[in-house]
Image (cartoon, rainbow, N blue to C red; front, side, top):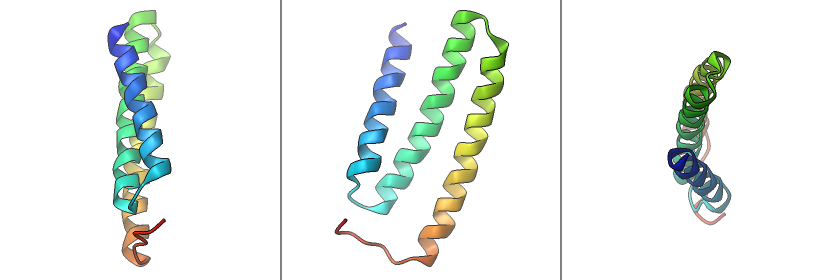
Length: 85
């Protein structure tokens, strides 16, 4: 239960970093943190509640987080960085 709480706090910290920035690179790293922490939280809950479907959801979330990170990197390559958001 303590591990789940730590993962939730990590997700909240990532959401705060997505909102505050200050750069797009910070936001990209926060999205990656959100995806990996969310997948880890789902895996912990799957083990705790003995729900194998949550493992599948964790794998899908991890895959979507990787694809989203690649898409954001491509987007950041094409647009100039705005340091003063």
